[in-house]
Image (tube, rainbow, N blue to C red):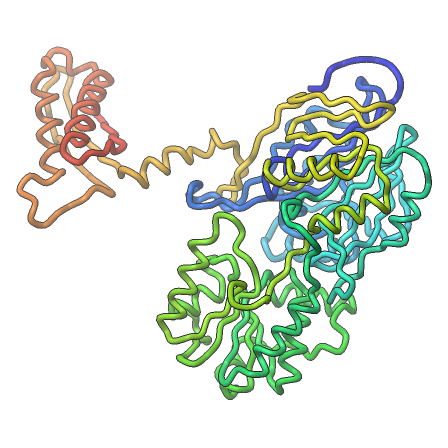
Length: 560
């Protein structure tokens, strides 16, 4: 918890996620004296469980600090509807019974997500309009349109009587974006010319890269060329939320006299929301996957989910031949118009290898410029500094290397106060700047199937051990005199079973268990707990000696 002190009203910033990793973005702004501070939440996102977290689908920030604050929490503002910014709202936010403020697209995405995932709990959504300020408790908030790889992304101007902050969210400067508004440069310049102190909480994802992020229009030109010159079917996998990319593919298909088939619920969901909001005017309707087999090979472009190697997504099922209606043949082309999120590289590469084995031409970002980032590079950061003239810079949204590169760059550009912070650090922004490291305990939650739990509650550690060494189960029955009535019986799962092994591991386990039982005095066997532990230790030790690994050993001694 924050230190208790009295005095004048303060404006503070506290990240619970997204500052030290990519994903799980959740930032808190506080206003008022510490003993009665009101809290505004900006974004509530997830990251994705990888191979090191078997069975875990999503990872999200632990909201314990907010739960402790209770009635002092006034609301949540959503910058945009990417999973790393909004993916945890329906899991975490219903418990707070406070409104979510979102743009039209973000609100529609939240509603569609709730229906698609059969989530019972709901949140109150209030829709804001970019450029129109609104009040949430003591916070005056103005959404400012920024270009990004999803429609209706917004930076936030957050003002209190103590001071004002620009929270950028995800952004870039794209002079010719597709499917999204350009960054409102005019408004940023107006804010910078105001003269009042300003803090900048800014995206750091590409802070290590020089120059400017390429435009979405350049990707559209390259996709148009690839589709126009393809002789057979073309399948393109994308981030489903990248509406601009979807529009570029549709336009390229129309110019090549091809029809677009969509495969994957996420693509249909995003396209449906965009059409309802008038964001795809002039783009022909997509055909459902059932139409795929009826179209000539040179008259179809497929947009498919699965850019991150997800095993149940359309592209993975196409690659392994398990999709019910879609296949790719030798001479067809598969375009990966995306980049692999760190941790997903092997899964993506496995799909690409399967497609190559099928005779499909695979095109990735290594071959053509068919994907661009939605985040600013260093020249774009410098331009934002020039427009806003911030007194304070706090890099967020990045791993430590991104954050430190951004902080160093900000100092080089002459920003007076640059703070390098991490999750759980409390920064007093106004009336003066103070950095309190590790002020609040932070943590993570796992979405494990339908359960939301802490890492300790999930027992993921035991799952990793099971994956590494398997499990050996021993069961026997003793009577009150310590005589063996039945067993021991054995069940070994996940251990090697070599057909030509003269001394299989099952025999090793049996010999170790019987030896432990024999060495345990009959009169002491009534103490089933100690007998079970003696057998467990013996079996585990002998299996390790024979195999070189220590499986989980469970021993059940039943007393009759």
